[in-house]
Image 1 (cartoon, rainbow, N blue to C red):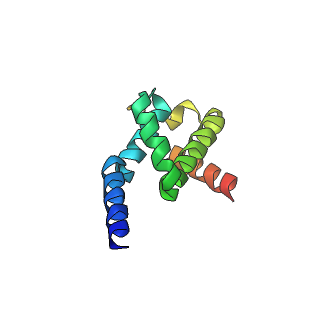
Image 2 (spheres, helix red, strand yellow):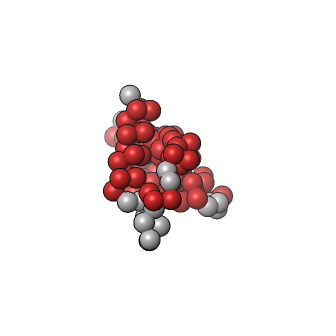
Image 3 (cartoon, rainbow, N blue to C red):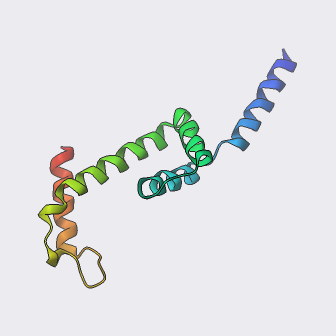
Amino acid sequence: MKRTLAIKLRAMRLMSRMMPSCEDVTRLVSAGMDQHLSLGDRLKVRTHLLFCQWCSMFEEQLRLLRTLVREEAGSLDGEDLGDTGRLVPGAKAKLQAILIRECA
């Protein structure tokens, strides 16, 4: 019985060393939205998402946010972007209102 427990503990330690951290996975999920990930990175993400509900929810929320912003991008006009290409405070408020409306 003790031997079986020791084997299970060793297997769990090995898995935790092989499994990427949530921080690594959220970075890869975000990067994967904009660029092609290597096969190894895609496998790391998919494996982690099988076991981690928090990272799975993060991926789902990021996909939803991306879809909503793309759908509503037409409602933003040229004045919503400042000289730096970043959203001005009023545009940010517009997007927040859209998200609240869509997620309610």
